[in-house]
Structures are given as C-alpha cells and as structure tokens.
View 1 (spheres, rainbow, N blue to C red):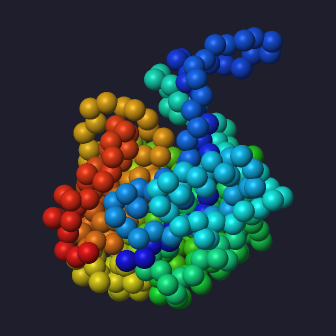
View 2: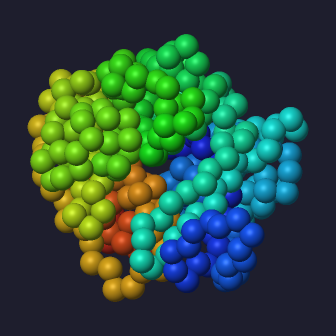
Amino acid sequence: MQIVVAGNICVDLLPAIPEAISISPGRITGIGPLAFQPGGCVFNTGTALSALGSDVDIVSTIGDDYLGTLLSDALARRRIDLTHVEVRKDLRTSYSIVIETLDMDRSFWHHAGASSAFTGHEIDATCADLVHLGYPSVLTDLLMQGARPLVELFSRIHDAGATTSMDLCVVDPASPAGELDWKLVMDRLLPNVDVLSPSIDDLTSIAYNGVGSGDSDVVSNARGLVDAGAAIVMISAGERGSFLKSASYERLSAAGRAVRPLSAEWADFESWIPAAPIDKVVTTNGAGDTATAGLLYGIATGMTPQQAGTFAARAASAKIQGKRLESLERSAVSHSHGG
C-alpha cells in the first residue's frame, strides 16, 4: 500500500533546559547543550511509517540552506525518497525551538519558513492509496481566501480515490491561521477528510467545539467531527489516552482505497483507547505524530479499530521512551487481517 505524507517538515532545535526559565533583559541564564533533530509531521509520521514497513513517499518544501541539507541527509539515511521535496532558494527551512523541561509541558517557538509556500501540487493521488497532510495551520499558502486552496486540495485527492488523512497542531492566534474561522473551514473540509488525528489541545486552539479539554469535551469533539463529515477521528488526550470514533458504513465506504475494505468492521465504532505504559520518558516531542503513524499503519494492514487504536498508543509509547518502532511491526502483523 502506497502512503504519501505531505505538509510541514522542519528542524527541531532542542536546548537542554534544567528548569523553567524566563527571559530577562541583560541576564545570562545557563542552559545545557543544543540538539538538532528533524521534525514536523512529514518527518515524524513519514519516518515512523517507514520504520514500521510501509511504502512511504513524502511531499514537502524546504529551503536551500544548512537546515534543508540537514533534513535531506536525515531522510536519505532512512532511505526515504526525496523526489517530491521541493527546494526553494528564496526561502529558509522551517524550524522550531522546542522548550521542554521536567517541570512544565513543552512549548514551541516556530518559524514556518518554506513550509508556508507548500501547495500540495506535487501530490499524485492517483498513485497513492492514502495521503496524509500535517499541520495545515502553518501551510500559509493553503489558507488564502478562507482556506479555499486547502479545501480544494482535499477535494482533489478524495475524488482521485485515495484515502485522505489530516493532523493538526496548536494554532498561534497571532499567525495568519489565527484569523480564520476554523469552524467554517473544518466543516467545509471534513466531508473529504477520511482520517483525522488531532490532540484535544489542537481542537481547543481553534475552538472547534468550545474550549474545554475534559473527557466529555474529547468525546463531544470526536462525535461532532464525525457528524460534520469525517470518517475516522482519533483525538489524543495525553496520559488519559485517546478517543477513537468512526462513522457509518456508508461514509466509510466512500473513504478511499485504504479504508473502504474495512467499512463493515469499522462502522459506528467509538471507544477510549488507554495510553500504553511508559517506563521512562526520553522525550514527548513527536509522540502525537507517531501515534498517527500507528493508526494509519493499523488501517493499512487491516487491523480492527480497537487493534489500530491500541497499536497507535504503543507506537507513541515507544517514541516517548526512545525505543525503535521496528520491533512493533511483527506483533502488529500477527494481529492484523491483511497486509
């Protein structure tokens, strides 16, 4: 099964910070060494799917600079085809400064850079079984005219018969994405979105169904997104696990090549999926993208919804603990109904 992962790719800059810090003019604050790490949806989800054994093609935009070279080298080492990675000489590669400490949740300082110019024109949906797009809120060119290009992109991919998938990120209210009426945008998008895998924080940042983040809010958001047209929704809620909800048999039957064969088994499913055990925390960065990869892998290999959701949780746990995903593939195959 051919999977395309498209959208945002960046370099994560991770300074080692021993405690929560504040920025004070004229003050020097000691911190630890800086780590460079490829990131963004395209890298995190794409390489996770590749590690699990999926056939992955990536479509993204980077700059002709040092960070772009770093990303290209990292992808090449993982034997991922770079044919559809556009290199822009007039733009800088996207990057994030990731602030992560033991005593507070991680936060990001993000520069959209070349990702802002991503249009998706190189996505060939006729050759793909599943197309996953990550972080539309930082893909600025897709948000013009009330996100009309984004809606048209998903319509084109869906009309070509590919299963469509999308993940979100927290929206910066001061960015162009913060000016959009996301309720309107999502309601226009969702009839052509087959798989949606946001966090509850992503949804509250766009106030899709209010700004609450409790268990009942997670459930009502999932049901609302399915009612608005999505076929499969998985909302992650951190340590509380994820809530997985699917639509009717009729909607799943129209969900593209990857989902259509699963329509009967996946129809009208909803359940909380517990978070997988974690012995040690190495990093939470990229865990959500890896959970998405686990869900998509479960769909691609014919797992039941319960199995796919559980596999997604196990993939995220492995990422958090710094474990290799390849070890999960064998157990996944033994529980799936297809390949």
